[in-house]
Image 1 (cartoon, one colour):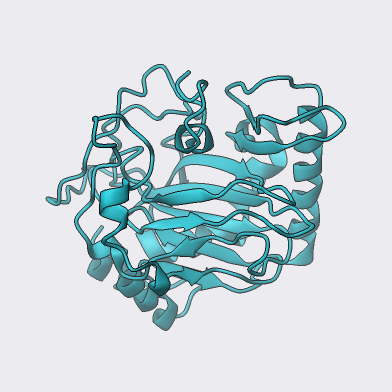
Image 2 (tube, one colour; image 1 turned 135 degrees about the vertical axis):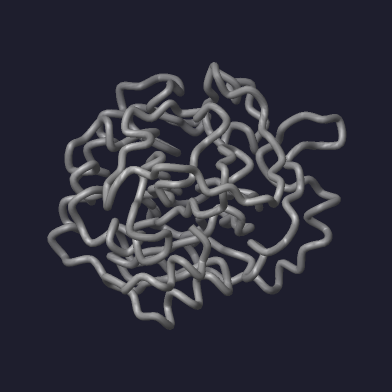
Length: 298
């Protein structure tokens, strides 16, 4: 759906001003919209994943670990497809206010793409370099967005998500280095063209939602605080957005319609999108790619 078509539908949760801000700026912060009960349940899920990761010795398709991860000092970077590994996560994605918020920004027919739970550990949790998402999993249009749930209060010290306003209107730069190797972020030459002083950092209390469009340039700094910063992320899209490359983390619930109905035809945006490598055999994570770890490609 086009932004004009989306805005023609009555909003379920967001104000018209919030919806128009998202389409103009390419992002939105919705402060503390979740009830405390959901925050409590999602924190418990996060703690369970960390506890399970203590017995994991190397990164696998579910658990992505920092190089210095140990059983007595876990350093879990990401859980891929947490919706497949804990029923509460799928319940939250499909039965909470979350999908209603998304429908206000992609239209009444909402499709699930994938989920991940990113951890940014205290005292050095890794940065995420500046990148845009759609280059990892191109679709026929640019309705896909990623909505993040803050499980704890997040200020500047824990390394919050940062976005470049209106960058979703820019041409998409290939996320390859000068030798043609995929790096999962802007190369130095293209990054030098970006005024990072314009970045907006999406800080807020627990229960807030961060939302950014699939074309929006975003990243996050290292966590230099004494507390971790887990961020539960869902990518969803209008039902008329169809992927045309393999999904690198192979989600079980991909293409599930969670609001409205299945599309009868695809909406095709004529703006081109640079293609990623062949993900048919999967990959480990954006962290391993950007940190140039040997395990980056599965």
